[in-house]
Length: 191
Image (cartoon, rainbow, N blue to C red; front, side, top):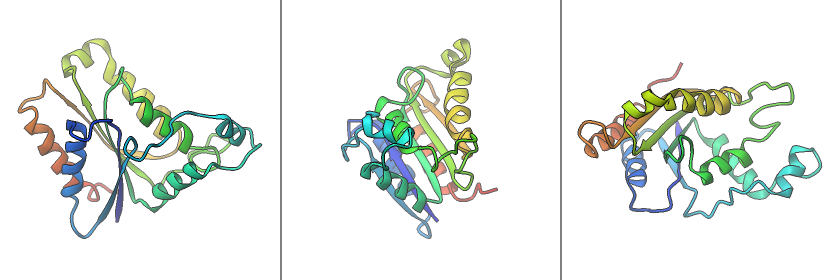
């Protein structure tokens, strides 16, 4: 089993990167993983004319998109580790999804999800606490937008979704404990 861990934060010393590293370090040795650091790798998140041409069936798949799809195709689980920006993904991660999850690969024209084999694990780090999320409905909005709107549409099962906040008990140590648990259990939640 192999996990692709996609991390999106510009600061390598951030808690986001630390959580991703702890998660990876605790994946059992019988399994492999790859970390895709979108910022360090310089992934261009901008949906460009070539991407639009592909969407319109007028151009071929861009090389960088093909390479990202190949990484996902090699994975038995996809793990996204990211800070919450405006109740969603950071722009680089959202652009990665916009460009990589293409028609014919992630979904088809009949709106059928093509990624049924891919369990997804979401690990979001947020400044606001659970009370704020509950009070304003942010958790429901994020669930609808990310879990249902993206991964549900593509047929991928969200196997776990973890929101880690600064208001959590034992912050930040609790975040690292959660990352270790997710890593250990990554391939035990198959259905």
